[in-house]
Image (cartoon, rainbow, N blue to C red):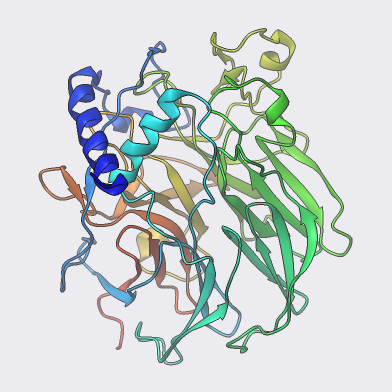
Length: 440
């Protein structure tokens, strides 16, 4: 039996063995908002796992959007697209990437890796940035070309002062670049190192530039679920760094943030926001993912507590002084949705109902039953803060029987026309959502 077949058989066997172990999760709707329902934790020897088989999109298939909106494939045939980044001239950069691999620390790390692979997480990433040019704004690019190649598990990108900054898994690399270029030929230079290493549990490095372009904010996830491998390997982890764009000097901006998977600057206020993945193996609903403003110098609880002062007894020794100062997030996004994308509306309007707020990409759960996420939602803002129930915007990535998944949303952004752009790393597609009445 080949190794590929062995892994596939092992994955199916583990799925079957664990199918009866899944404690049912509660109603996800109760976990959205500023005061989500947080039940008592439920810990496991082996965490419940449930992942639909990734199958991709058939020709002509698309996800579903509400009446009055139109969805189209802007680009397909990509290699694990993760981040979509619009440029000032209207071009869109697509970061195609996957993790570099990490050393399994525990037997269940290997098992969970097999399960996650069913959902497309192990697909080969392009390790490149592709440029899409849609000059007339009809959602059909006239040009699709590789801007820069041979990167090392890239994720976050930012453009400032004629420079493209790429957050690889282990360093920020700077490339001379002006919007309008279609190829970068010059080698990049290292601006700053980022935590990586043989154990690189949360490999993605989210990044956003400050409004004036002088600083780069970089999200670095923890190197474990809940410090089960000791705190020595968590140095410079579970944090958001502020990096000086000119010198590369970095400092802690906020800490105790388990896995800040994407960052965004709120228009008008300049406030930094993050979407964050909560901890695993603590029950189907105990620790919701969240969207929150990030306070300079703030501590958000990891690993000692979650959602403010909810103590995680698995972490020993505890630090009550740290728990006491843990900041409660602004807005719960429900548990295990694996939120990976966030983008504020900025005056552009796909629809009037999306005039003030943020789009959020929910990649989808792997350790919860029923499945959760697998959609793009919109969160309203009132007086600068997230408020009220979310609105589903793009759905039906999951097949109706919930056994297969055609795509999984990751990064989200808005193009110059106000259309919503979404990276789908399982469907290897970039989707574009616009008003149905738009001229094409």
